[in-house]
Image 1 (cartoon, rainbow over the protein chains, first blue to last red):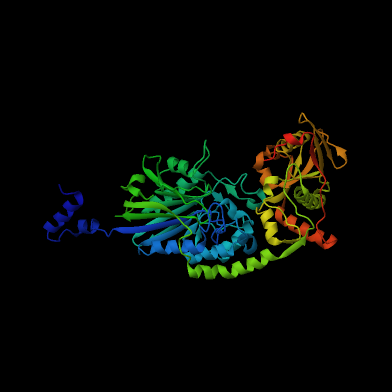
Image 2: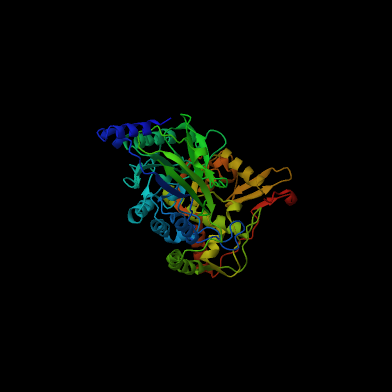
Length: 289
Length: 255
């Protein structure tokens, strides 16, 4: 039995090209491919772990990470490189150079966006604002930290729309409750808003107003927790209109790959996290039609 | 493991956007030591690495003995707590006019021993790799009592300004400065913000009467302290006195 699309195409052919409208409307679209690469909790791991490291000997580091990124990109598909926060803190590189080489690395690797992790505040908001303003050639997206009364005003985007080929991709970001994680003086006057409603608001804009083909949330909430604390899995379940939640904070290694979580409307959302310290590259290869 | 996106996602779109996901796969790839290093990235890090090498090799000060982090108290724990005490006390005096009563850190936060001889910046980072900063809390007498009991339960933590004697029944006698501990008064306590967030079970730090953030990392305070003592005396001053004494040392928790 012919599908509706074939049926219409056939009928336009039968009409001898007179009926142009249905053909234009249902013209066979070019299938689109998209490669999403993502990292989280980089923690200033510019160099690989030392060869005598008990847990990760010789692993990670930007020199190896770049090789893998390039290998993945060599497929030639349109690609997106994303990060989920906590770029900073963890090696003396950060103490010594204040985050500059980390942001330069992200520029060179071609990151499109990151979100705000709790450790990104470690040198204060003035410092972070200077870094973003002077160095970041990528977007910093977050929708639940109100920074309008802080030095970060105007530097954090609630959402981002990226065109890749014929695809329109919507990206938003969400951060963890700073209480007990970020010393109060390092996030002075920043207001933390509810992740679920903040994200839903941006996702609705991305779907309904911006007509995005797919919506990605960059999260620094953490993969999952016992109890009621908001996490990536819970965010996936409590919202709708999101296809991908890429996360961080809990340094979760998902060796079996991403997981699928049913959302509020019974549709599934891909949730993933890529360990930490540049030890893992999350890779999603997607076909669109 | 590579998983099919079709198992994870609902494919048919409901949005009014023209494209929807029809397939794909997801995998998390480990960056193993067998992955070759990208030469342009190596070249990019090289100057930072060299500069860091110089920075890490920089001499901060000198010791004439090794300093070790050991429970219930040790020369390194005494030194660290004393340097934090000195810094926090001067800040507190300037900001409020009050004097500090006590400094408490966590033994678990002192990650390495300080060698005997020249002390490098790298040594200081190894001892204190974390970016925890110094805070001053005003605690009620009853919170102080909980704090002292917590220190005893943990087998001792780095302290300055305190002498703590624990009898066989785990009952304590405490002196702050020259005065006996008085649970009816408030005390000014310096510590690291990590512990005030509930780190290492210091729950009594969570609701202080007052809190002052001193915007300086514990490591910076230690570095400055080692520098200035070396300048002043030629070496870091020894602090071997036993500030926390258990009547029954055998029963002291070590971890």
